[in-house]
Length: 86
Image (cartoon, rainbow, N blue to C red; front, side, top):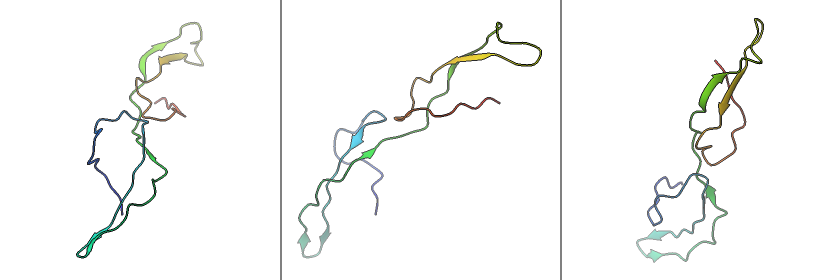
C-alpha cells in the first residue's frame, strides 16, 4: 500500500524534505492503534536544467570543445551525479 498525496499540512514541502508518518487501519469494527513512526521518505524530483552553457575559448581547439555551465537551480532534493552533453 502506498500514499501519493499529502493529506495533512504542511502541503508545500521543498524537495529534499524528509517526511515521517504514522498509519492506522480501519474496518467495520473500528480503528486500530497507530503504528510506530516510519523512517521517513525524502521528496525527490528530477533536477532543473543546468544554466548558462558557454564555450571556453581557452580550452576549445580543432580537436576538443571546452564547455562550462552553472549548476541547476534545483538539484531535486539530492546531489546531481552526472551531466550528459549531446
